[in-house]
Length: 285
Ligand code: MF3
Ligand code: CO
Image (cartoon, rainbow, N blue to C red; front, side, top):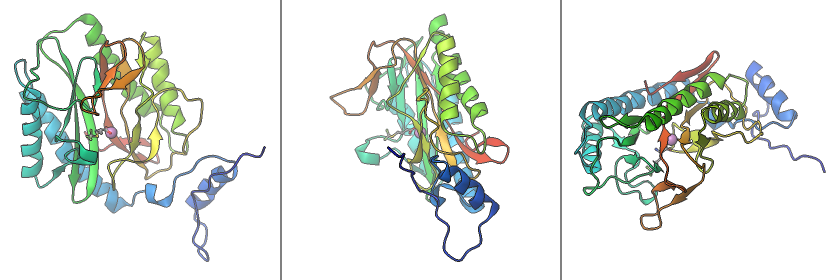
């Protein structure tokens, strides 16, 4: 059977082909998945996303200064809401597909999408992911960091470090005119080398004009190329690295909280990037 070619790149009739058109069309004609025009951001849009990212980083820096044992995750939620709104922005999670809070706080075996609560108190030895997403003037940014509460075990410390390294090797693997699939390949190799696994059910994503856009950025080795990476594309990389099995489930009660199947810990770091002619530039520094 002939492989169906997915045609995303159209050139308006009557316009001359630019160098970029020609380059993208050559990949498309070979059967590769290429972006749509909407995924290539204009310089003005990139500036908007960058400004959103400055506030997003301000939120994470504030959380980094304030987080401590004995604090509830609801207190983190209030810090995020107050900082974001007082800077003229909106916390993107709040009300997103019914999500009830302004931030995700995911402790130990919680992989992601943990909902802040008055009843949840941070304890010495916990490892916590705080995932912050901001809308400013309609532009979205998205980043998360891990925090270690006091002293933790060497294994959990290693997990947090390796998860961060996985984000770094993913960044280095992402090349202009390469493919999204290069990212997951590199991340999976680094995670496995360290004895850890990579979550498959959740991925990074295009971001900027909406919270979640194409492409899906898988962090494991799907053995597919995935979408062509073209300068101007904006997306996240956010590998979730598990100490045990890669398998996860969603808490039935709240419909959000993602937990490891074996209840061993998980760690995640995330940034928003723009692809440039020279590689990825971080927009959430
Ligand atoms: N911030 C998450 C991400 O990295 C998305 C959270 S959706 C929410 O894509 F509704 F839970 F906030
Ligand atoms: Co994200």
